[in-house]
Image (cartoon, rainbow, N blue to C red):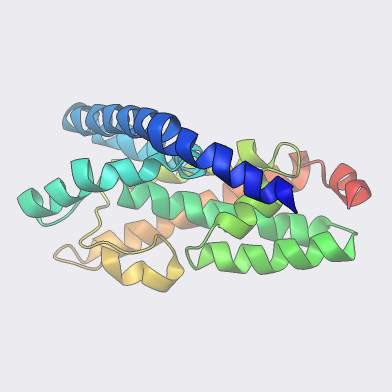
Length: 215
């Protein structure tokens, strides 16, 4: 009974006074760096965001991009291309990896978890897939990052932008509908590339047998 209480009492002040400020500082640096890089190589920003967005979500640093980059971009250009396109691809890749694990797994519990988490991730909520599959099954995180980079690269090369904020996923695809009618088309092609690359890599390289044995 005391263990959870002591954990909260110890970790909470450390988080508020140490981890939180440090994380926010690092996040602000990353956001400013991505903003500067976007002025020189926009295609590279989408590629990097597609690849490393899972790591940003795990640490909570993705929230640092909202005030520094996203809101500023909307105010200046009426769209943003730094976070939206890459995060959209990355979330779809999370869903692809979970679905691949769900199909390949022989363990009923893991199969059910991965299948449901995969569908949820496609709609934009990736935490179940990330913490239940991506970080649990060996090599899956690398497959997600590779697929995110591939789809993000296409997205960046085609100049995909997001016209308003929304959870990156199929449930909010309308945020990519705007002045350029081809923007939504390229957005779907980019997530299609990410999904295909991630699914294939996960199918061949994820150590599902080991995860089955551990369940």
